[in-house]
Length: 533
Image (cartoon, rainbow, N blue to C red; front, side, top):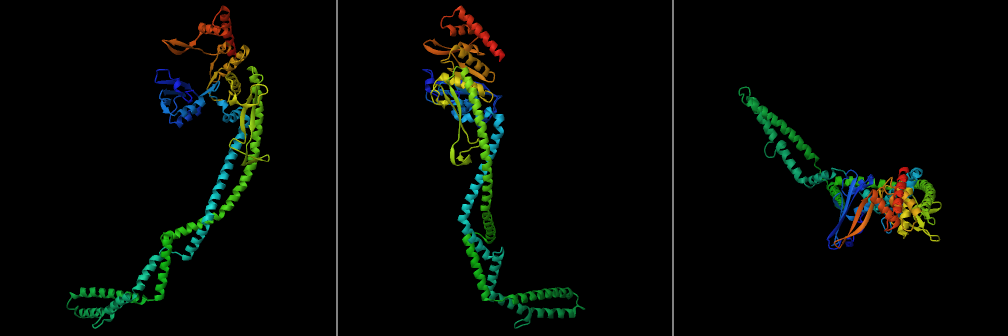
């Protein structure tokens, strides 16, 4: 139990010692073991696993998988994949009704795999559609809360007729209109000085006079020729400047009404920017996004309607499919009940009744099957549990309610004999399996254990010589007192030692010639039985 992660007690520690440790080495083939090791960051090592556990008198416990420290829960998880212990109050996978559905389905894999896969795929689609509907409903609810706000904002921004560069243009025009008098004064002054002059001649008039004078002396004084040419170029530029000044002067039109309109427009823009905490380009983008949200939201109800139609169709198909799977499981259950009953009779348990109970659970949110709403999962609608009655007149009870260790072990042996081909657990331990049975039944039990050992490792603790003789290996477990301390000794006995021990098991403390002969005959018969299987 320590190896498979069960609770550790300090009573396990020898008196006077500080700690105790136990270690087990497993060879396995199941990929699920590798996957479980990887969950704990452990790389598999050639399908070999070393499990160890140490406990101290202080109550501390240390668990390791291939030398790496792990929590005890890791041992429990991986132990379920490696070992099944069958005896009174022991760890047994078959006692957990959560495993019964997989066991039953595995027995009829060829018959129900297609139906099971169909149900699984339909259920996943059913869940996905329902999830999509719920998501759209939440989205629509959020939209309804925001709808009025979005509409108002889109309308407000539409009416504002925002343009990317409008604000800069308005602010420039505002500056001009607010300073129109000063601007006109400056332009008038420039125009007059350049063209009309004030008390003296204008610059252009004076420049023309200089050019005329220089042209009069060019013929006999060449140095002024280049100066004259430069002055003409300056004159041309001044005339261009004068034309520009004249145009600017004529374009300035101080209009108080226009200024008021600009101020009102800028006030509107400033208010909207402040309200939304965005600049003009951001507001334009926001309006586009808000309008798109409104458009999407209007389609939500239509999408929900389409999905609901699909969901209704899926429910009808799923209902038929789970019912088909349910029927196939009921047929499988009947076959398993008959097979287990036969095995139990062979094991001397003629009065035991075994039943596979298949029930459904009502659920108002489930799917409708034959006029009743039932709970559904990816596995279908069936709750499967193995029930048993060990005595006449007793009601059927879950396997976990079996009290007798011997009965429990034999019932589990019967089940394991049937499900051996689909059960991946590689090591089975049977304890007290020979309690309360006669020699003939013990022989049958031994033969079934031997057959079962062809596909997995079987460890059996027994006081029955019939069962012991059929083992491939025989260990003798005994206690010894050495220097006042008790030790448990385990010996692998062979040949004469094994015959001697079987004889002791047959006849008690006194070993006779007849019991030795009988023991040898048992071994010979066991060899013949194993050779035939």
